[in-house]
Image (cartoon, rainbow, N blue to C red; front, side, top):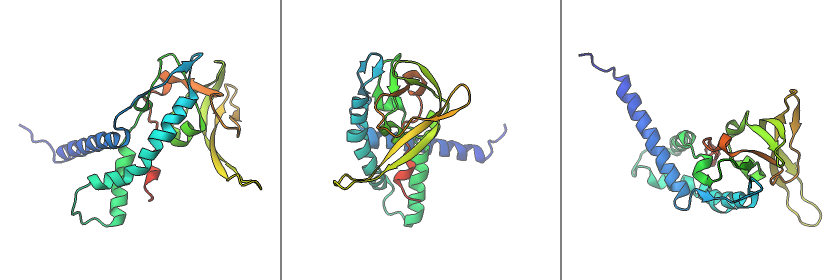
Length: 207
């Protein structure tokens, strides 16, 4: 009987560790209450409920995630801080928190591309997805994210950054979604994104 090459069990171990890390990260990040039930209005999932879940539940958990992961790591480790950061980044990169992990939405509903959604979602998750107006009119396909810096004013309003996007029309033209606060002006089909990663976790740990 042929013996398995040493590489095979090593690869199996790596896959198991990655899967275990993924489950652990999901548990630390989501806990109870997910996926959140989102209502729809005229076939479009409510943007205010989506942003509320992201900004009031997901974001605070994301900020606490690196510390929670460090607490879960093996005690008494001799790793230096640089190698620990790298290990955390590798673990976060391998984790896939899907849109369906965060939200429960009607299969035929449209999903709004709010600024909060765009800020947190990996660009790769949205590339090539069909983009529509809220009315259902097709505009083209998602072509990439962009950032817009809005400065403060003399009345004390703080500067802030909006994350917006570009889409490619069927004619091959690239158009910007604009610099307005995106609520539900632009939407995608829920069935197109529900099994795609919803959160880019790697930036939580500095390189």
